[in-house]
Image 1: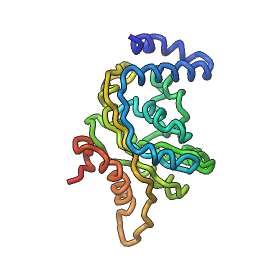
Image 2 (image 1 turned 180 degrees about the vertical axis):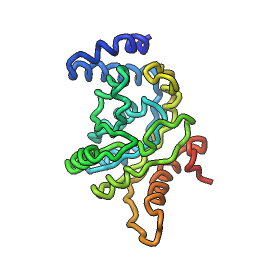
Image 3 (image 1 turned 90 degrees about the horizontal axis):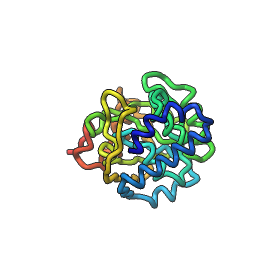
Length: 236
C-alpha cells in the first residue's frame, strides 16, 4: 500500500524543498527496509577498519534497492554513490536518489566532471561506491563490467573493496516496462564485504591490460557470490 501511495504522491513530493524530499525519502526507505528485509551482513569488521580511509566500494547490481540497502550498510563510511542519470528522470526513483549522497553519471559517455567530483570525495578521506556493470542485471547474475572504475582507482590510488549482493532482485524485482512501478517484496538480502585490494601495475606486454584488470576486479565480487549470481564471471 505504501508503495502505491508513494507512486501517486511522487510528482507532488518532487516539487517540495529538497530537505523535505530527503526527509520523506529517508523515512520511507527506513520503513521499506524494516518491513521487507531480513538483512545479513558479513565483513562488518572490514567496514569498521575503512572508516576515515579513502575507499572505492564496488558491487554487483541487481535492483534499484541496492543503493538504499548499501547506504544503510555503509552508514559509518561516509559513502557517495555514483548513480546513473536515468534515476533522476522517474519521480519515485528521484525521491530515493535524494536520500543518499550521489554523483550523477551517464553510463554511455566519458564523465570527466563525475570523475573529478569523485576524486574530490576520495581526497577528503571519504568513500565512493560504484556499480561497475553500469546497469542492473536483468538475469539476476553478473554482466560484463565497465572500465570507469579503473580510471578512478588509478588516479586516486585508493583501495578497492568488493561487495557481493544477493537477494535484492527479489526485494524490488525489475519492471522491464516502467521502473517507477516496481513494488517491494519481502526478501532476505545478503551483503558480503571483501578484503581491500589495489589494482596491479600495468603489464606493458599485455595488449588488453584494461580488460584483464576489469576481469580481475569483477572476479573479486564473483568469488563471494553463489554460483547462480556469478554470470559471465562464473568460477569453475
